[in-house]
Amino acid sequence: MKRKLSTTFISHLLLGLIIFTACDDGDVAVQSFDFEDQPLSYCDSDQSILFYVRNSSGTEAVLADLTVNLNNLLNPGILNYDLAGNTNNATYRIFDDSAGPEYFCSAIPPTSPNVVEQFTAISGRAELLVVVSKDDLDGVLTDDELPLDQDTDGDGLFDYIDFDDDGDNVPTAFELDVFNADGDNNPLTNPLDTDQDGIPNYLDPDDDGDGILTIDEDLNADLDPTNDFTDPSAGPDYLNAAVALNSLQPLYREHTYQVVSSIDLTLLDLVLTAAGQEVIKEVLFMGSLPNFLTTTVTQTPIRD
Ligand SMILES: [Ca+2]
Ligand SMILES: [Ca+2]
Ligand SMILES: [Ca+2]
Ligand SMILES: [Ca+2]
Image (cartoon, rainbow, N blue to C red; front, side, top):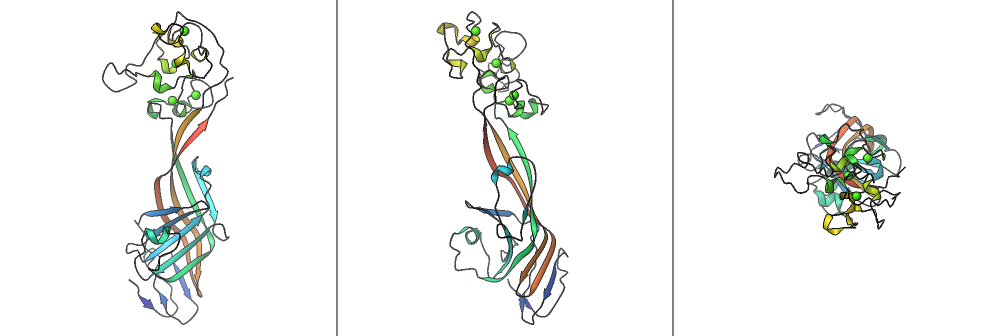
């Protein structure tokens, strides 16, 4: 819905943070600027990400087109984007009808709705608040891999992001209670402990207690001790205390962990202009995107 009014005015609509100055005598469309509780959406392209939020009727929208380096979303923090340049920009549009996702995300804009008025940011900044959650998906919940700075094998990857906690090149997921003999589906209640030394296999770098580290019981040197069998009837060498062959393995296998990034987007100190009008918005919270990005990080630790 569109309404019209004339002459200069100072808006006290809704959030009360908007100042309009009409410098001509023409009619201007009325802006509600009410985006509260409206979901933040986005369209992805190779160059940038177009974030947008619409009002409840879809006839107004604030858009922020930001060149975001996704690598910067892997760690928590605040990212700022200057809206005054060409790289990043923000606009506020008023339409003659409801604008849906197809309007914002089409390579070629649809013929309707029409843009009745567009304000463009001449200054201001966009602030992305980044919150991340990291997990190695190794079968042990992060709550059971605390404290967060615990690094059992000293390879530089904390246990909660280390899918091979004891650094023996046998991933934790394969060293837990994989047989689930107790039937409780809890890998920590009855973890494998081959040498019965009280240290479960997933935290024990010498699983059979034969004095040769599991990582070094890797005769074919493929970074996988589970496929080295001197006596196949007794299982792999790393679980067979009767076989103690040291084939020193200097390398760790490649590790991966998952980073899930959530973001909040806020526009600050925003100055928008259109045809002699100016809109100043000190704070415009555009919304949140939980689980915005999921990234698999690959890293190969160095074995000292
Ligand atoms: Ca580690
Ligand atoms: Ca782990
Ligand atoms: Ca082990
Ligand atoms: Ca052995």
